[in-house]
Amino acid sequence: LDVRRHRSLLLCDELCFIKNLSVKIRNHYFWLAATVNIIIDILSKRAIVENLRVERTSVPIIPNIFHFTYIRNHGAAFSMLEGSPWLGWLSLFVSLVLVAVGIFIVFSKWEQLGFGLILAGAAGNGIDRLFFGGSVVDFIDLRIINFAIFNWADVSINLGIICLLIHSFIDRPRQSNR
Image (cartoon, rainbow, N blue to C red; front, side):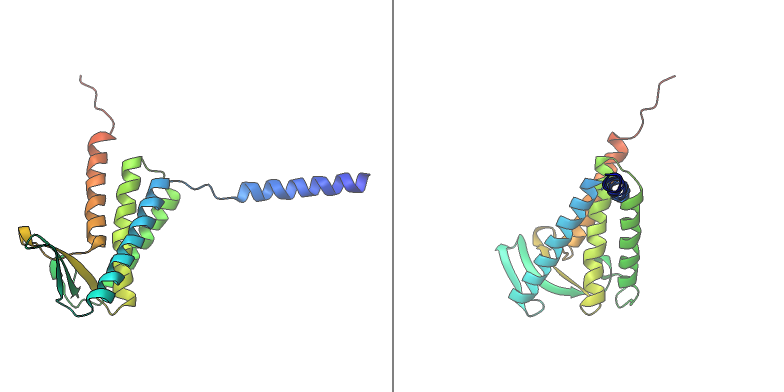
């Protein structure tokens, strides 16, 4: 009887130890925003590459307003720093820093969304640069405003910045009037 009791106490101690080791997931919106948008970015780029195949091929979605146009961007935003081999490593570094921040720091909802979206953008373009020839696939062509062609990772980064701006106006502590 004592041996059984001793074994059950040991088992309970082991289970309690394992329970205490379990990781509590924080920043749910951060991880959700990052994961969903990385998947959208990867799938949309692969669909463009597989379906359009030849660079500069354009498919009008709404003629003269919105097209899917396949290009490869060898630079950063608006093709700046074209041919810089360190852009992929910079994207990887930014991604790793944001992952660490998401693990160790608790954020408000708007911060989680903002940093998660920025992580998705950095990771999405970083994946292209590091694993697919040093360039990113761009395809969103807003001809109505004659804007540079971009991709979903770029959209994610911009939406992330907007979320952080919203946070700075909504979630900041109120200053008391004296």
